[in-house]
Each structure stands twice: as C-alpha cells, then as structure tokens.
Length: 618
Image (tube, rainbow, N blue to C red; front, side, top):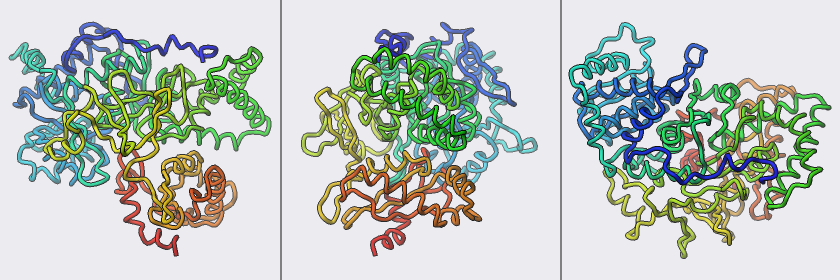
C-alpha cells in the first residue's frame, strides 16, 4: 500500500498528546494549550462560524456556572435531548465540568421514552433543542419529580412562552456569568473534585429487545479509550472531521467529540441529517467516520449519477474504476503495484476518480472509517479502488466503541481486524462468541445488576453476543449475532447478515431482513431506497401515486427480483432467497421498526409482519 498512499499520515501514535485523567481536566488542559486555535465549526444562517478553544471554554464555563447557580449537585445527572449540534457538546462538557453525569436522548424518541430515560437516569436537568423537543418534556414532566429545570437551545417559536421551570440556554449562560462573578473558582473546584473512577456518561442501548439499558462509563475508561484510539487510527490538530451521527450514540460521543477533544482535530457540525451529502462536499473532511448506510448511500448516488451520464463518461468511469480495482487487488494481496499500473492509476485519478471523490466529498480524506454494523466487502474494495483506504472497526456501547480495527497497512475486506492494543479479544471456545476484556469495558448497566452479571463474567470478560471466527493473523470476522443465526428446517446453519449485506450493496435496497429459522427456505423483507427507486420508476414510465403503490408496481417488484437473482448466484442453493416482500410503509427514525441508527429491528419486523411472512411460506 505504501506504493500509493502516505502511510506516515496514518501511523498510530502511542505517546500521550494531552494530559488529564478525567474528561473534565483533559478538556480544560486543551483550552489552556490550544486557546486561539479553531476547534468547532457550525453553520449559522448559511455561514460557517468557527469557535476557538478559548471561545468554547468561555461558553462551557458560563453553562457550568449556570448549572451551579441552579443548585446542580456533584454526581447528579443532566440529560440532553437534541440533534447533533455544537450546543450539545457545550452542555455535555459543562455537565462533566460540574462533576455531573451526562446522558443523551435520541431526538427521535417519543415523549414516553423521554420519560423513561429521564426517570431511570434520575435526571435533574434536561437540555432540549427546540420547541418540538420541549413539547415532549412538558408532556411528561409531571411524572418526573426529580426534574428541576428544562433548558432550551433554540427559542424560535417560543418568544411568548413563559414557564418557571423552563429557561433558554442564553439565559442560563447569563446566570452563569453572574454566578462566576460572585463565586470565582467554584467551577474549577468541581473540576478538581472529579475522580477517574467517577461515573461520567450514560449511553442507553437502543432497546431492540426490551427497555433501553443505561451503560455506565467512568472518566477513567473514557480517557483510556480515546488515548487508545490514537494507537488505532491517529488524528491530529490539522485534521477536519464531521460530526453528524447522533451524539447520544457511543460512536460519535467517543469517536467524534471526545477523540477530537483529545487530539485537537476540528469538528464540523452538519446542519441536519438531510444535509449530510451537501455538507460533506463543503467540509471535505480529512478523516471521515460513518456507518455503512452512509457509505452505501454515497455509492448509490454515484451509480445513479453514472446512469444519467453520457456514454463517453460511462466508458471513462468503467476504465478508471477497473484500473483502481486492479491496483486495489495488488494492495490487498500485499504485492507491489507495477510502474505501468501506477501510471495508469494516476491518469485514472486525474481524469475520473478524483471527480467521483469530490462528488462524494472525500477527495481530501486520508482514510475512511466504517463501523456500528457489517459492511459489504465489495464496498470496501470500491472505495479502495477510488484511492481511499476504508478501515473497518468493531465494538459496541459496552466496550466504549472500537475494540478491534483493520490497520491501513493490511486491509482485509470482510474482516473487523485484530484486537486493538488497549484491550483483549478472544472467542468463547464452546460457542464462538466474541469476548472482550480491558479498562475500556463499561462499569455495568444502571439499576440492573442482574443484567450486568449476565454480560460480564467473573473473569471480567464481556460477552458481546456476536459470533465470529479468527484467522492465523489474528484478524476477527463477525459471522452473526448469536440470537440471529438461522437454522433451517433442514438443519442448515445460515448467517443472515452476509446475505443482507449483499442485498444492501444494491442502490435500490436500503435494508433487508432475511427470514428462515425452522423454515424450509429463506425469504426476505426488504426496504427499498425511495429516492433511487422513484428515479427508476420515473425513468421507465412506471405509474405510481404514493410509496405503497411504488412498492407494488410490477416493474419495481421485478427490479428487486433481479437484485435478488444476482445475489443468489453468490450463495449455495440452501442459502438463496426464494421469495420476498417489500415493506409498503415509508419508515423514518420515529417508527418502531427502525433503530435510531436506521437499522431494521429483526425481531420486531418478524412479529409485526408475521402475516406477510406466513404468506411467503404458503
């Protein structure tokens, strides 16, 4: 790989780049050291506004003092109900600086879920983004006796609203400035009182199999993990990153906010989830971490644009990506790239591939990181053919994020890499379950000692629920979730995630759930990509009046059948999908069938659409 990419820019860094044994002390050390440098950027009224470390520190100080003025006590919990934005980070750091516990709530959660999470975490303060999120809090506050104050980021639409329990973030900052004048050094005393073993954050699991569980992470584990991340995927102060995944999810909280706090990499906030493609082209990040669905959408966008291009452009792309794939194959085999092929690749990049990279927004990217769900190996090869290494990491909420990672020097598509240097990973000899042990493993589940004991055994090994294999080089590969493995009526063990990943590689399929446990053959419930399928329908004069009629159109059914036929050719007969059903309801993150990270909930889908599943087996 060193023939084509400067791996010195991706080399792991083992030295400590920022002192501090708690997140709070580490943050204030960063403010002191990096003062005038830019850390955060957010778009306001169409213009990007930069925040220096000094400015961030001032805002955090004001919010922190505001919390003290409200009577916020050490070790109390404050929850944040908001989309990913700069204010989320300011409030998070202020809570931690006030020796509190910070908890995030998905902005797509309903009022009843907000009630459960605030009650379970014993939140005394709730930060909300706007009037929409405030409405949820107001619906349930009468059943939250511990909740003392609700603080709103954006007061638009609330100009005439007056409620003694509710105040704006600006008002809290003003209160904090007054408190700092009369109580100088009070926040610094709180920061100094925070111990590494103290609980810092709660990250609630998405609750696909019952009520969400609050995973507890101490300052010590978080600091240890972000330092460990730099030995896996190094960043520095010159890097530009995007912050767009939910901050209440472990990936963006630790891999985005806290890792950038540690390394000094700039964080750029997208305007909203819908503007990610536009914002990434503006930002052109040098390091880009995302979930597979984002990488799939970018690939789909390129494929759709290609279909609309001229025959000459299509031919140029076919030649250029072919060259890229030949280069990628040499790289993956660990072989030197021949000089002539290098020259061809340089021409391919100049003529075509750089334009594709700019179209996506990754032309400056040193590398891409994918995690949180399995990704198709073909997608990893495609990005590598564009000239950008894609590194897959694996972990979970309970491991504070990444526990394994593919090194740039030795990429193996389909693998999640060897164990990260900062933790142990092994397979259970009886079940093949992946086990993790290390200081990055969480403290346990809040208020659920029995669940904690089920998850962490007496020797400290975390039972992840993922089944895997490991090769002679120590590279792990996930085969499936223990509870998701299908055993057909004929006794054949099948891992549905492999088939589902192949289906999702199609630009016309967003997600899929393969069915077949104790059944004579496999079937699938499929969620189409609305934009791409609508475009297909318009291009082929397929009549439809709404989403449901689009899914039922014979031409769309045949389109998906063609995708399934193509995927089936990659699998043995017993692993092939015989029938499918297209979800005829347009789903969003507010719907119960989807997790907050937009993945179909397997068990809920199977229960809710039992009648449609049975129809496929009649």
